[in-house]
Image (cartoon, rainbow, N blue to C red; front, side, top):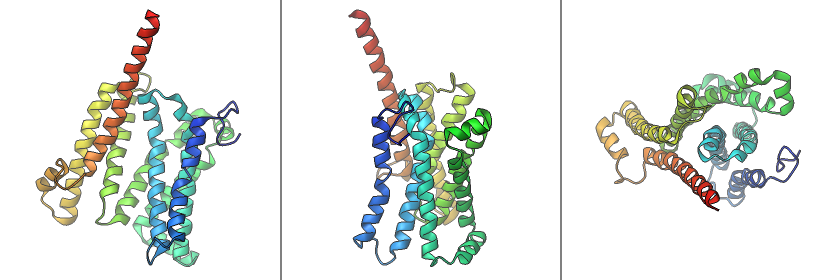
Length: 284
């Protein structure tokens, strides 16, 4: 079966589109490198760019189930494995670029991974993602059994947390995007936990999703305020007030609100459209 085919071997528009888009970040970074747009340290800039896209793709794979449930778009399930495998391909590229930066001195690379905590955390995420990729095929699902396979693949949440910690530690003072990713991870994990405990058949009602959107936004704002208070001694309430205003541009909490609320609103629109279509069909 080709990546652009559905389980029946037919052309899948969703898989075809996503398969093509997954190459865009690599082509983008490669084009910038070839054009000399990555500055005086092109390997370092490419390393960071590919690493950033690895985390984005990993989080996108985590978002597939909530998106499928909220939007009632079943075809999204077809691209979850593809996105996860792409995240692994990008993280392998990230490791190769790091090795190139160290002149492929593998002894030095191994030593740095052991001695530097943020590298050790990142490499642990690499190993976890490798295990998930190796067992992502239908044949491995059958060989392991459904329950054992699901238990193993739940470590993707741990991998997401490890990747986020690595992102924070290597970003140092520039934590705008890591904070956005932290807020989105809070929303994703919270959605899963609430749906598991209180949802119907693992699905969270849209009203609950909306409430959790507000809560995740506030947690993001508070988290950023606490981070800058602990790391730089910034006044807690001043940072929190900034996070909830638009005076200094878009803040991470606001972007988390926009993304999660946008998904919830699209879900509400989908429900309204379906209800209108059923009423129109009943009158016809």
